[in-house]
Image (cartoon, rainbow, N blue to C red; front, side):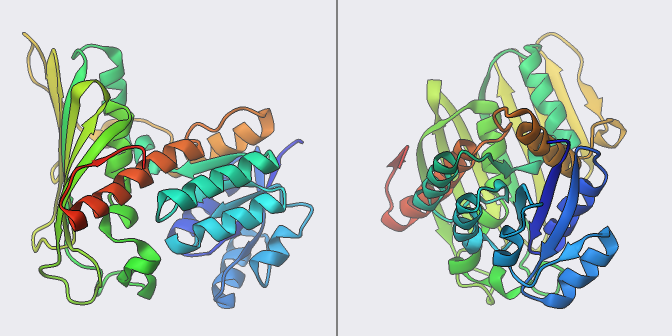
Length: 332
């Protein structure tokens, strides 16, 4: 296989971004796109210089499509992945992998049975702030990480470019932990390892046009006695995004407003890093490139389905914990 032929399922903002990244890579080519709104598919196909298909079945039936990018609404990920695996297509699935652990496990099982690759697009890992922090932690300069705290909270969807009907319902988007802060859950795991338990409190206080919680507070216990805390949701009239990593020989903070990383090693001076000056491969391009390379080289995906499953388990466990008012142990 000289290159990977890609098909895109759903031509929304993230799907468009992923397809545009693919066009810039020599190792793959966009073959066709599809979307329930035909005009979106035809417009994107014209922009990319590829074909468009009337539906997903037609896309999966094409012999020149080796792999699919699934960027459809969250509740469709499982069924689309199962169809793609049955058709023998490799799969790059947008986050969240699924809306419950059972569906995520079914996706892994289908990919394994069909001997196709399954990678989850957790792009936050590859963005400059988070890529730098991961490298800093892995360097050992600050010792071993033992705790993290992250806050990512803003307002509701109304009036913005993300205000699509499927994001207003738990049934289709899953709520803030799935649609947004699966990113923060994933990055906590990226730093601290796998989780052993979750306890959470949630409420619906401010946003009237959604049928799920707009505030979520999680405490997560990780292996080795490590701890993580997450505040997420849509209930803030003044949004913020920041985080802290505590290590045995240092501490690192990040903020998005201002966009800044601060860290200090034991006995050293505080260091300031402007993420805008960091030179990393664009995150969306990197995840598409790594997916294509794992298909071409028959190597394991860098973010395999098991990683997506563990993230989904934490989000699902938080919902159970908040509903039942109890600590939930993992895996589910």
